[in-house]
Image 1: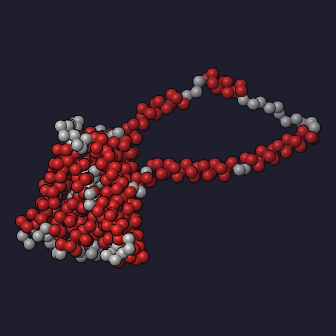
Image 2 (image 1 turned 180 degrees about the vertical axis):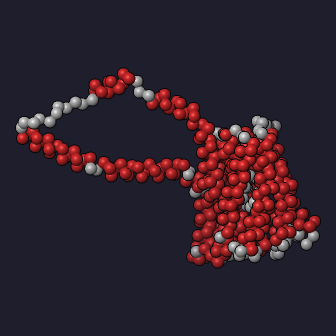
Image 3 (image 1 turned 120 degrees about the vertical axis):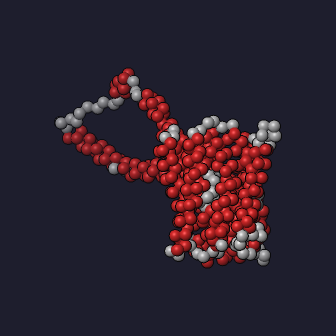
Amino acid sequence: MKILDLFIAAFIPVLKVLLLTALGLFLALDRIDILGDLARQHLNKVVFFVFNPALVGSSLADHITAEGIGMLWFMPLNILITYIVGSSLGWIVLKTTKAPYDLWGLVLGCCAAGNLGNMLFIIIPAICKERGSPFGDADACYRQGMVYSALSMAIGAIYMWSYVYNIVRIYSSCTNSEGEKLDNSTENITPMEETTEKLSNSRMRPLLPLNGCSAVKDHLNHFELDCSITARKPQVQLLEKIKQCFQTFATKFNLRKLFAPSTIAAIIGFMVGIIPEFRKLLIGEHAPLRVVEGSASLLGEASIPTVTLIVGANLLRGLKGTRIQLSLIIGVIVIRYIALPLLGVGIVKGAIHFGFVKSDPLYQFVLLLQFALPPAVNIGTMTQLFRAGESEYSVIMLWTYALASFSLTFWTTFFMWLVK
């Protein structure tokens, strides 16, 4: 196959992304104000709670089977490698550029997490439908591509809210804790007058009488009663400690975000696809509840254009954003568009050589493409949540997504040539 055909097949999906992104940016202008701040917030909630779960759940339920899931075990490991390698390279950039400490979580998150869901859902189906596609039959390519994209999105969401979320939380809490510690330390100091009042108001009892057996017996009875009460206290304290530990774990690791609607939809999609009884009920032309799966697929189709419009609208903030170190922007771009794709070629080729990855060109292409995607959009949600690096995130997103048109076209062409 000619390189020109591969280039055209790779450029068409990227061009679609650019057109939708430009439309979103246009709709967010102050003169138009269709996708203003309030509209984006409401639209984001609809995507997060409705469109994305419908897309992930319906894609997995419709296309995944018990036989096929065993062959996809390397994808979660591959995505984890992108996160670990990306954050390690980001740490090197932070050390060399001497970036402000409050931006460490943002930079590490942008280097670690790629846009594993939405970009794959746009690129893979579009490539399958192109005439110059190296992946064979368009319908079979589309079905398998939707499975790989849905699985990638679900796994990426789990890693995003367990790995990147805690990185951003730790560095934002470290920078904000110094002032809070000073305030709390002054509040916790009790005045001397209060302590003397507490001492004076405390109960005072006489010492044990030495004479009188009845008094001693009464006291022994009280002593036994006190002992029986205090013996239960460790059990109560143990239960309270376990409860506090669980609450701390749930708060720190944000289990509510970890089990996001897309993750829950992925679990349901796996169950429907793998369990034959559920599959017969919901999937297929003769399934009695096929209208449920059809409605979910219809809702899921709205996810990709909506998210792309929101990304374009958010890029407008980057044009108005504050200044950020140029070296940080260059560092993120070099890691995401040069270092990670090159390392990804070696990792995936090594996995193929040792037999960890099946000989499916489309599957190998998706694994390679996971190393070459722009930063994840959900990092912006985390910066807003912790009030750390919001405007800087918009600037980084502006430059990375502006250069993604060239980078994705090049790497998509190269990866298709590599696996064909």
